[in-house]
Length: 360
Image (tube, rainbow, N blue to C red):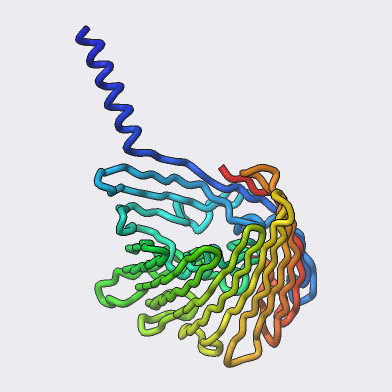
């Protein structure tokens, strides 16, 4: 009898623990094949499977969890890595390169510590119609979809439709891999307290059918950092103003990102302007598109991009898609249409990509 009571008590305790905490595994696998022309100065074309992600969303595997602490308070965490489905290799040169944080949440919002998305990246949610796709805004500015900060504290809270957010990083990027995956600015320096720091802020208002969004991000340089930010007195700042309007079957998004990059001696100031729209032709088929222009104030080395995409949902989790896009490079601009791709300087580029996406 005593043994039965012990077993029953243990089962009750286990069920109670399960009710108070949970862990979810999730992910996206997105694989695609693309073709684009003018991949080099000789005008050669290229057919490939892109490694930086699929045609619609970067592939990922993640874990998120929450524990009910009582009184509306929860302990929360999220670990998320990126990977390349064409080769099976890790993305961002890290085990959990997309997100790695732990924190607390309540009716006051949430605060998290670790590797967080910055508020500029978060401000593009919903309003950037094409999103972090292979032919999206990341082709014109790779910082946008890769806006994450190491060694950071992040806060977000929503109150009566108003969302406030901010991040502060003591050392924004510990990886020295180069490119958007790592810029070699670890910070947390004894001799230079400002080196490699970053801060960002978000203000957003949501109402039925529309939203108004603003965000600001500033990164500081440091010795040995990439992209010309080789000292802490150099900064790279972006201000984002955007809005979207949506109804049952369609959505319209528009925004502008103003940049002041002290790491560039020739093209420090630029505006990235974009407008996109999506329409649900049927419950299973969506047609969307976007036009964007990267305009440098000091030169005529500008780039303009247009994309149109069709998405057919096979189920709630699986979809096939095809997209066609073009980028026009003026002057000496060499902005590739495909993220991680290449183009001859001053050459225009046309591409097409098709693939399949599955979420779990």
